[in-house]
Length: 570
Picture (cartoon, one colour):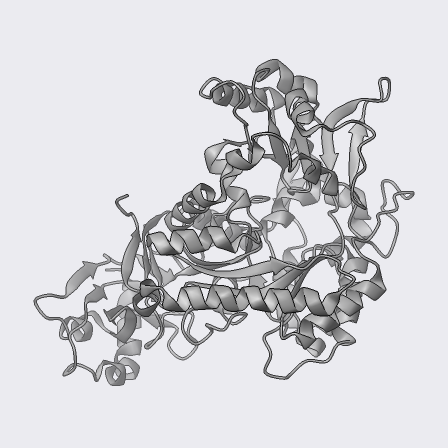
């Protein structure tokens, strides 16, 4: 046993004696002993052992105290001194749309375009002619900074349509066959903010489709079958459990896939789902229809037999909107011109007046709102919209997603308005040196990815991945908050270290902070007596000086409501 754990036992013995007062009641179904338990509960931040009864944490204390509660039928886990944390909750992810990385190709963090093409060719060789190749997460800025072309794909996968999202999910790279199947030409009309890049000499599409132009592929022959949301949901959930995730705030907008998986008995994580609210001229009808949908889903979930034994599993909890794009393609709304291309003039996804009307209508219909805003002007517009719309004091918090650049004055407005900041750590470490400095200059860099400023101002900070634009692995995301390292001038080094977080702060952002955005705040998010027993066993003891080693830790087991969901036999 670690010397540190011996010290914890002595400290926690007296406080947890009272918690173990249920010894005469029903024996626990599961006890976990000899662990370094990080509860994320400020009333009992550390423990050595706990018990689970009927799917909920029922007692905490020393290993000796918890052992005394067991019966002959109680399952016992001796953790051997490793760290146990609450089930992790991703505060912003796209579970279904991201699943193509598992079923297609994953080009994450690969710099060499030749390696991209080798992976794509290898995938094509496993498929029938005409089968789509999806996935992606390519990042041309890691290498030569030159966008890829359709001709590259045509060479390695001539008989398979290829459609690959970039690292941000805001650009698509398509082969000629994919473009042909979608019926796209250089003259095809695109939604506001979208663009079809064309060859300078021929005027033909290069194979790169920005923002809304990517939606032109939606009707392509065979694409909907390749995307198969139900199979994608199953694959994504299995991957999430393997990484210690027991919950997610999902932005995919396809709740029916989760309902199918729920009815199969395979929904092994808690999904706080969003529904997309696009610009509408008939707002009252729009949000009335969304309420009908929310009630439909709630009834199905309530009637499902698994809800009684596993706790809350699925809820349509908020509406999602978007006001701007991303920094990489200069489509994020900025107060000042882009430093590298001052003439860039990105268009908002809706005008400011309509944004205000959308938020007000959502609030009147009882919905909390989550709005994508990456540029500092976009963040200002969204805060203005929230400020202009009154809400009940007990309503769930509104939130802004991403907030990659924000003015110091707006950081203060988050707290005053009660708006949550939903941020994704890996976006900082992957992209600052690649293109963010070029876009906003070093002078504005202190306004980028300001996690520490958010917490110091008392703001509610929720952490997530935005998978598939960055790794789904929460331990990588937490590690990014600790070191903030990126490639600058060819050298990987920390930058703006004043905005780093501690391990405990990051863990809170990936657990209870996310739970507090839902109706389930008192049921999940921490290892607390009476909450559902969602927890994760890591492979090692996490030292006080966590460092980057957290990124290399593995999940040994993931439990949801006291049931092991990873590893699991399928």
